[in-house]
Length: 401
Image (cartoon, rainbow, N blue to C red; front, side, top):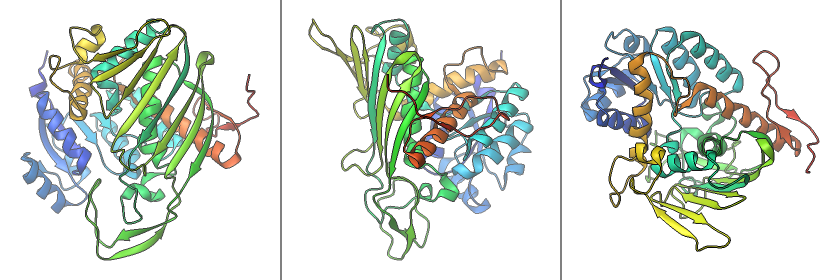
């Protein structure tokens, strides 16, 4: 069997996340052939800054490189569908950032293309790969908390708190109709589905834009930049700053999540609590080495990430011994390790641990339901009819039983 060092991977996008992809690929021994930026000059500059062999002039140039077997897509959301489809058509495996596409029609199209190709097609829901989350998934699915009854939590950030904060994700044409939900809420929804094995059946959503006009810099701004532009242009905002969502899961479990990109002091706080019939589990991405375990008739516990104390799934995801912190960047290496195990055999495994295009399409269908519920003020069922049978979410009077 080939080794990872014999696999060539190219990365589309040279911003914050693109750079994380490059560094994670190097960590797991994959050869990074080059990067593709927004322009040929940007590609050249980024290739030099990242010390990779090539800065590709275009996607055609990238796909014309015979050394490339896998392409990582970290470009703005509006480009995902076109680029991922071209990559699959060229016979290359693909890893795409979330959200997978701008619409569920596009994600259905990509899922069909990926299925027909037989290639590895992954979506980078990397938060699954914190070791404690791998531990929790195996524990919950194995009945370790009893029957899951309630799943609650949040995903809060503050990087868009001020009206002078700007990023391409703010504009619907580039980021999609959902901003906070699509960008970070999708991580929470994918993660809790992964942890519990339960999909969302129906939801009730409220979306709010607290900053209706923002000051867009005259020049470009990188994600999470703290720079304030001197010259700005007022722009009306039609994507949400905050979302509140009530959830109904398969099997009768209930849930809720709050999503915000303007919560002061919260830099990157994805938190969940899973309440079962025998015990509960809680975790926060800002303290990722700690898992809270709640009991009724015994002292509550804090499990500190330690391969010696976790189950087999948690141990497999851990790269370091207990007391040696593993964080955000480590999840990319762990996720890509799982993806490239399948790349080495040339096809997806029967039950991939990483998120696939099917999971990415699922999040787009949930997004449809969020938009429809926010528009109608009603509970909406997530539409899972086959592609072509109608993709609009169904707004119905869902009983509260």
